Image: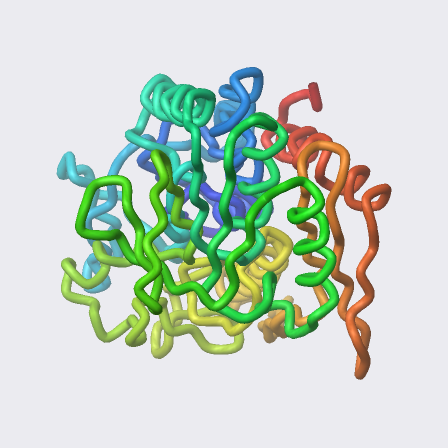
Amino acid sequence: MYDGDVVVIGGGYAGVRLAKRLDGTARVTLVDRKEVFFHRVASLRAGVRPEWTHTPFIPYDRLLHRGRVVAGKVVRIDTAERQVVLATGERLPYDVVVIATGADYPEPARFSGTTTEEAAKSFAEHQRNIATAEHVLVVGGGPGGVELSAEIRLARPDARVTLAHSGSALLDSTGSERPGRRALAWLESHDVEVRLDSFMSPGTEFGTYRDARGTVIEADLSFWATGTTPNTLWIRLAGHGDWLNRTGHVKVDRTLRVEGKLDVFAVGDVNDVTELKITPAALAQADIAAHNIRAHLKSSGRHRKEPRSYRPTQRTPLIVPLGPADGLTVVPVPGGESAVLGSRTTTMAKAKTLMTPYMRRQLGYTAA
Protein backbone atom coordinates (compact mmCIF):
# COMPACT_ATOMS: atom_id res chain seq x y z
CA MET A 1 0.00 0.00 0.00
CA TYR A 2 1.59 3.26 -1.15
CA ASP A 3 0.85 6.70 0.24
CA GLY A 4 1.37 8.66 -2.98
CA ASP A 5 3.75 9.67 -5.75
CA VAL A 6 7.07 11.29 -4.86
CA VAL A 7 9.29 12.62 -7.63
CA VAL A 8 12.90 13.36 -6.60
CA ILE A 9 14.73 15.60 -9.07
CA GLY A 10 18.46 14.92 -8.82
CA GLY A 11 20.35 11.76 -7.90
CA GLY A 12 23.23 13.16 -5.83
CA TYR A 13 23.92 12.42 -2.17
CA ALA A 14 20.72 14.00 -0.80
CA GLY A 15 18.47 12.72 -3.62
CA VAL A 16 19.69 9.14 -3.37
CA ARG A 17 19.34 9.04 0.42
CA LEU A 18 15.83 10.52 0.29
CA ALA A 19 14.61 8.21 -2.50
CA LYS A 20 15.92 5.19 -0.61
CA ARG A 21 14.28 6.32 2.65
CA LEU A 22 10.87 6.67 0.95
CA ASP A 23 11.07 3.61 -1.30
CA GLY A 24 8.93 1.49 1.02
CA THR A 25 6.15 3.98 1.69
CA ALA A 26 5.61 5.94 -1.55
CA ARG A 27 5.83 5.43 -5.32
CA VAL A 28 9.25 7.01 -5.80
CA THR A 29 10.61 8.21 -9.13
CA LEU A 30 14.18 9.52 -9.08
CA VAL A 31 15.11 11.61 -12.13
CA ASP A 32 18.71 12.42 -13.04
CA ARG A 33 20.50 13.53 -16.20
CA LYS A 34 23.36 11.12 -15.48
CA GLU A 35 23.04 7.39 -16.11
CA VAL A 36 24.97 6.55 -12.90
CA PHE A 37 25.50 7.98 -9.42
CA PHE A 38 28.56 10.25 -9.29
CA HIS A 39 30.53 9.87 -6.06
CA ARG A 40 32.00 13.36 -6.15
CA VAL A 41 34.11 12.79 -3.02
CA ALA A 42 36.34 10.48 -5.11
CA SER A 43 36.49 12.79 -8.13
CA LEU A 44 39.60 14.83 -7.29
CA ARG A 45 41.73 11.68 -7.08
CA ALA A 46 40.02 10.32 -10.19
CA GLY A 47 41.11 13.43 -12.08
CA VAL A 48 44.74 12.77 -11.10
CA ARG A 49 45.26 8.98 -10.88
CA PRO A 50 44.33 6.64 -13.79
CA GLU A 51 43.53 3.69 -11.49
CA TRP A 52 40.73 5.79 -9.94
CA THR A 53 39.12 6.77 -13.26
CA HIS A 54 35.97 4.64 -12.84
CA THR A 55 35.77 4.64 -9.03
CA PRO A 56 33.30 7.56 -8.73
CA PHE A 57 30.66 5.88 -10.94
CA ILE A 58 28.11 3.65 -9.17
CA PRO A 59 25.04 2.37 -11.08
CA TYR A 60 21.57 3.32 -9.85
CA ASP A 61 20.03 -0.05 -10.74
CA ARG A 62 20.11 -1.50 -7.19
CA LEU A 63 19.08 1.65 -5.32
CA LEU A 64 15.29 1.25 -5.32
CA HIS A 65 13.36 -2.00 -4.90
CA ARG A 66 9.90 -0.62 -5.64
CA GLY A 67 10.54 2.80 -7.14
CA ARG A 68 12.27 3.60 -10.41
CA VAL A 69 15.12 5.73 -11.70
CA VAL A 70 14.55 7.74 -14.89
CA ALA A 71 17.43 9.14 -16.93
CA GLY A 72 16.23 12.49 -18.21
CA LYS A 73 16.35 16.27 -17.97
CA VAL A 74 13.66 18.09 -15.98
CA VAL A 75 12.60 21.37 -17.58
CA ARG A 76 9.91 22.49 -15.15
CA ILE A 77 7.62 21.75 -12.25
CA ASP A 78 3.97 22.34 -13.19
CA THR A 79 2.50 23.19 -9.78
CA ALA A 80 -1.05 23.66 -11.16
CA GLU A 81 -1.19 20.15 -12.64
CA ARG A 82 1.23 18.75 -10.03
CA GLN A 83 3.49 17.25 -12.67
CA VAL A 84 7.23 17.24 -13.35
CA VAL A 85 7.88 17.91 -17.05
CA LEU A 86 10.87 16.29 -18.79
CA ALA A 87 12.65 17.59 -21.90
CA THR A 88 11.13 14.66 -23.85
CA GLY A 89 7.64 15.94 -23.03
CA GLU A 90 7.00 13.11 -20.57
CA ARG A 91 5.08 14.20 -17.47
CA LEU A 92 5.51 12.62 -14.05
CA PRO A 93 2.58 13.17 -11.65
CA TYR A 94 3.47 13.93 -8.05
CA ASP A 95 1.90 14.32 -4.63
CA VAL A 96 5.26 15.61 -3.39
CA VAL A 97 8.20 16.81 -5.48
CA VAL A 98 11.74 17.21 -4.14
CA ILE A 99 14.38 19.46 -5.70
CA ALA A 100 17.78 17.83 -5.11
CA THR A 101 19.72 19.06 -8.15
CA GLY A 102 22.81 19.96 -6.11
CA ALA A 103 25.51 22.35 -7.23
CA ASP A 104 27.95 22.54 -10.11
CA TYR A 105 31.58 22.06 -9.06
CA PRO A 106 34.66 23.19 -11.00
CA GLU A 107 36.92 20.72 -12.83
CA PRO A 108 38.01 18.05 -12.16
CA ALA A 109 35.24 17.43 -9.57
CA ARG A 110 32.63 17.45 -12.31
CA PHE A 111 30.69 14.81 -14.22
CA SER A 112 31.12 15.91 -17.84
CA GLY A 113 28.31 14.89 -20.20
CA THR A 114 25.65 12.37 -19.21
CA THR A 115 27.34 8.98 -19.76
CA THR A 116 30.09 7.18 -17.86
CA GLU A 117 32.20 7.13 -21.03
CA GLU A 118 32.04 10.93 -21.41
CA ALA A 119 32.94 11.54 -17.77
CA ALA A 120 35.76 8.94 -17.80
CA LYS A 121 37.18 10.57 -20.93
CA SER A 122 37.24 13.91 -19.14
CA PHE A 123 39.07 12.39 -16.14
CA ALA A 124 41.61 10.72 -18.46
CA GLU A 125 42.30 14.05 -20.14
CA HIS A 126 42.97 15.72 -16.76
CA GLN A 127 45.29 12.83 -15.84
CA ARG A 128 47.28 13.23 -19.08
CA ASN A 129 47.53 17.00 -18.64
CA ILE A 130 48.73 16.64 -15.04
CA ALA A 131 51.23 13.90 -16.01
CA THR A 132 52.95 16.20 -18.53
CA ALA A 133 52.59 19.63 -16.91
CA GLU A 134 55.69 21.48 -15.73
CA HIS A 135 53.74 23.90 -13.53
CA VAL A 136 50.22 23.35 -12.16
CA LEU A 137 48.33 26.24 -10.56
CA VAL A 138 45.42 25.52 -8.19
CA VAL A 139 43.30 28.55 -7.30
CA GLY A 140 41.30 28.36 -4.05
CA GLY A 141 42.45 27.40 -0.58
CA GLY A 142 39.28 25.76 0.71
CA PRO A 143 38.98 21.99 1.31
CA GLY A 144 38.80 21.19 -2.43
CA GLY A 145 41.83 23.27 -3.41
CA VAL A 146 43.96 21.91 -0.57
CA GLU A 147 42.98 18.30 -1.34
CA LEU A 148 43.59 18.71 -5.08
CA SER A 149 47.00 20.34 -4.54
CA ALA A 150 48.05 17.40 -2.37
CA GLU A 151 46.83 14.83 -4.91
CA ILE A 152 48.72 16.57 -7.73
CA ARG A 153 51.89 16.88 -5.67
CA LEU A 154 51.90 13.18 -4.74
CA ALA A 155 51.22 12.11 -8.33
CA ARG A 156 53.85 14.49 -9.74
CA PRO A 157 56.73 14.91 -7.27
CA ASP A 158 58.86 16.49 -10.01
CA ALA A 159 56.38 19.19 -11.16
CA ARG A 160 56.03 22.71 -9.81
CA VAL A 161 52.72 23.07 -7.93
CA THR A 162 51.34 26.42 -6.74
CA LEU A 163 48.24 26.95 -4.60
CA ALA A 164 46.91 30.53 -4.69
CA HIS A 165 44.24 31.61 -2.21
CA SER A 166 42.51 34.98 -1.97
CA GLY A 167 42.25 34.78 1.84
CA SER A 168 44.92 35.22 4.48
CA ALA A 169 44.67 31.60 5.69
CA LEU A 170 43.86 28.22 4.15
CA LEU A 171 40.59 26.47 5.12
CA ASP A 172 39.26 29.77 6.49
CA SER A 173 35.61 28.58 6.21
CA THR A 174 36.23 26.42 9.30
CA GLY A 175 36.35 29.57 11.46
CA SER A 176 39.54 28.31 13.11
CA GLU A 177 43.18 29.01 12.26
CA ARG A 178 44.62 25.64 13.29
CA PRO A 179 43.37 23.55 10.31
CA GLY A 180 44.79 26.11 7.87
CA ARG A 181 48.14 26.15 9.64
CA ARG A 182 48.27 22.34 9.60
CA ALA A 183 47.43 22.23 5.87
CA LEU A 184 49.97 24.96 5.08
CA ALA A 185 52.71 23.07 6.94
CA TRP A 186 51.97 19.86 5.00
CA LEU A 187 51.90 21.60 1.61
CA GLU A 188 55.10 23.57 2.22
CA SER A 189 56.91 20.49 3.54
CA HIS A 190 55.95 18.78 0.26
CA ASP A 191 57.30 21.65 -1.80
CA VAL A 192 53.96 23.17 -2.84
CA GLU A 193 54.26 26.93 -3.20
CA VAL A 194 51.35 28.52 -1.28
CA ARG A 195 50.45 32.11 -2.11
CA LEU A 196 48.01 33.67 0.37
CA ASP A 197 46.15 36.97 -0.18
CA SER A 198 46.38 36.23 -3.90
CA PHE A 199 43.15 36.90 -5.76
CA MET A 200 43.89 35.40 -9.19
CA SER A 201 42.44 36.14 -12.61
CA PRO A 202 43.47 34.93 -16.07
CA GLY A 203 46.22 37.12 -17.57
CA THR A 204 46.29 38.71 -21.01
CA GLU A 205 48.29 35.87 -22.56
CA PHE A 206 47.33 32.20 -22.64
CA GLY A 207 48.87 30.36 -19.69
CA THR A 208 49.41 33.48 -17.60
CA TYR A 209 47.60 34.43 -14.41
CA ARG A 210 47.66 37.71 -12.52
CA ASP A 211 47.01 38.46 -8.87
CA ALA A 212 45.47 41.65 -7.44
CA ARG A 213 48.93 43.20 -7.02
CA GLY A 214 49.73 42.68 -10.69
CA THR A 215 52.15 39.78 -10.16
CA VAL A 216 52.06 37.46 -13.18
CA ILE A 217 52.33 33.67 -12.77
CA GLU A 218 52.93 31.41 -15.76
CA ALA A 219 51.47 27.90 -15.56
CA ASP A 220 50.70 25.37 -18.26
CA LEU A 221 47.74 23.97 -16.33
CA SER A 222 45.27 25.50 -13.88
CA PHE A 223 42.34 24.34 -11.76
CA TRP A 224 39.89 26.75 -10.10
CA ALA A 225 38.58 25.34 -6.82
CA THR A 226 36.76 28.53 -5.95
CA GLY A 227 33.29 27.49 -4.96
CA THR A 228 30.13 26.07 -6.44
CA THR A 229 27.02 27.26 -8.27
CA PRO A 230 23.59 25.82 -7.36
CA ASN A 231 21.93 23.96 -10.25
CA THR A 232 18.80 26.10 -10.33
CA LEU A 233 18.90 27.91 -13.67
CA TRP A 234 16.20 25.53 -14.92
CA ILE A 235 13.91 26.70 -12.09
CA ARG A 236 14.37 30.35 -13.10
CA LEU A 237 13.83 29.54 -16.79
CA ALA A 238 10.63 27.66 -15.89
CA GLY A 239 9.17 30.80 -14.28
CA HIS A 240 9.79 30.03 -10.60
CA GLY A 241 12.50 32.63 -10.01
CA ASP A 242 10.62 33.72 -6.88
CA TRP A 243 11.64 30.39 -5.29
CA LEU A 244 15.31 31.45 -5.38
CA ASN A 245 17.40 33.86 -3.32
CA ARG A 246 19.95 36.23 -4.87
CA THR A 247 22.69 33.55 -4.92
CA GLY A 248 20.39 31.18 -6.82
CA HIS A 249 19.69 28.85 -3.89
CA VAL A 250 16.15 27.58 -3.27
CA LYS A 251 14.54 29.31 -0.28
CA VAL A 252 13.27 26.76 2.24
CA ASP A 253 11.58 26.92 5.63
CA ARG A 254 12.68 24.95 8.68
CA THR A 255 10.88 21.80 7.48
CA LEU A 256 12.88 22.02 4.18
CA ARG A 257 9.79 22.95 2.19
CA VAL A 258 10.09 25.56 -0.52
CA GLU A 259 8.68 28.69 1.10
CA GLY A 260 4.91 28.77 0.73
CA LYS A 261 4.65 25.33 -0.91
CA LEU A 262 3.30 22.40 1.10
CA ASP A 263 4.21 19.75 -1.48
CA VAL A 264 7.58 21.02 -2.78
CA PHE A 265 10.79 20.31 -0.81
CA ALA A 266 14.44 21.15 -1.53
CA VAL A 267 17.41 19.32 0.02
CA GLY A 268 21.21 19.42 -0.12
CA ASP A 269 23.54 21.87 -1.87
CA VAL A 270 20.65 23.40 -3.81
CA ASN A 271 18.87 25.04 -0.85
CA ASP A 272 19.65 28.14 1.23
CA VAL A 273 20.25 26.43 4.59
CA THR A 274 23.27 28.13 6.15
CA GLU A 275 25.85 25.44 6.89
CA LEU A 276 28.94 23.89 5.31
CA LYS A 277 27.68 22.23 2.15
CA ILE A 278 29.29 18.84 2.69
CA THR A 279 28.01 15.29 2.29
CA PRO A 280 27.01 14.61 5.95
CA ALA A 281 24.81 17.73 5.90
CA ALA A 282 23.09 16.60 2.69
CA LEU A 283 22.37 13.19 4.22
CA ALA A 284 21.02 14.73 7.44
CA GLN A 285 18.69 17.00 5.44
CA ALA A 286 17.44 14.04 3.41
CA ASP A 287 16.52 12.17 6.60
CA ILE A 288 14.49 15.09 7.99
CA ALA A 289 12.80 15.69 4.63
CA ALA A 290 11.89 11.99 4.37
CA HIS A 291 10.17 12.17 7.77
CA ASN A 292 8.31 15.35 6.80
CA ILE A 293 7.21 13.94 3.44
CA ARG A 294 5.82 10.85 5.16
CA ALA A 295 4.02 13.11 7.63
CA HIS A 296 2.55 15.14 4.76
CA LEU A 297 1.38 12.08 2.80
CA LYS A 298 -0.27 10.59 5.90
CA SER A 299 -1.64 13.89 7.21
CA SER A 300 -5.29 12.92 6.77
CA GLY A 301 -5.10 9.66 8.76
CA ARG A 302 -5.52 9.01 12.46
CA HIS A 303 -1.78 8.42 13.03
CA ARG A 304 -0.77 11.89 12.00
CA LYS A 305 2.92 12.70 12.36
CA GLU A 306 4.19 16.17 13.15
CA PRO A 307 6.82 17.63 10.83
CA ARG A 308 10.31 18.09 12.24
CA SER A 309 12.47 21.17 11.92
CA TYR A 310 15.92 20.80 10.42
CA ARG A 311 18.70 22.20 12.58
CA PRO A 312 21.75 23.19 10.52
CA THR A 313 24.74 21.04 11.45
CA GLN A 314 27.37 23.39 12.81
CA ARG A 315 29.34 20.58 14.44
CA THR A 316 29.96 18.26 11.51
CA PRO A 317 33.60 17.15 11.28
CA LEU A 318 35.31 18.42 8.14
CA ILE A 319 37.71 15.83 6.72
CA VAL A 320 40.42 17.03 4.31
CA PRO A 321 42.53 14.21 2.82
CA LEU A 322 46.13 14.99 1.85
CA GLY A 323 46.59 12.03 -0.45
CA PRO A 324 45.59 8.47 0.48
CA ALA A 325 47.61 8.21 3.70
CA ASP A 326 47.46 11.62 5.34
CA GLY A 327 45.15 14.53 6.08
CA LEU A 328 43.40 16.43 8.81
CA THR A 329 39.98 16.25 10.44
CA VAL A 330 38.45 19.36 11.99
CA VAL A 331 36.07 18.64 14.87
CA PRO A 332 34.21 21.72 16.16
CA VAL A 333 34.18 21.94 19.95
CA PRO A 334 31.24 23.77 21.62
CA GLY A 335 32.38 27.19 22.80
CA GLY A 336 36.04 26.56 22.05
CA GLU A 337 38.75 26.18 19.45
CA SER A 338 38.17 23.34 16.96
CA ALA A 339 40.08 20.14 17.56
CA VAL A 340 42.29 19.08 14.65
CA LEU A 341 42.90 15.35 14.36
CA GLY A 342 45.78 13.98 12.33
CA SER A 343 46.64 11.49 9.65
CA ARG A 344 45.62 8.20 11.30
CA THR A 345 42.02 9.27 11.99
CA THR A 346 41.70 10.97 8.60
CA THR A 347 43.12 8.01 6.67
CA MET A 348 40.67 5.60 8.30
CA ALA A 349 37.69 7.96 7.99
CA LYS A 350 38.16 9.11 4.42
CA ALA A 351 41.61 9.58 2.87
CA LYS A 352 42.36 5.96 1.89
CA THR A 353 39.05 5.00 0.25
CA LEU A 354 37.35 8.42 -0.05
CA MET A 355 34.17 6.85 1.42
CA THR A 356 33.69 4.75 -1.73
CA PRO A 357 32.75 1.48 0.06
CA TYR A 358 30.16 3.38 2.11
CA MET A 359 28.52 4.93 -0.96
CA ARG A 360 28.59 1.64 -2.88
CA ARG A 361 26.68 0.01 -0.01
CA GLN A 362 24.18 2.91 -0.03
CA LEU A 363 23.42 2.09 -3.68
CA GLY A 364 23.04 -1.65 -3.01
CA TYR A 365 26.47 -2.77 -4.21
CA THR A 366 29.27 -4.60 -2.41
CA ALA A 367 31.91 -2.36 -0.85
CA ALA A 368 34.69 -3.42 -3.25
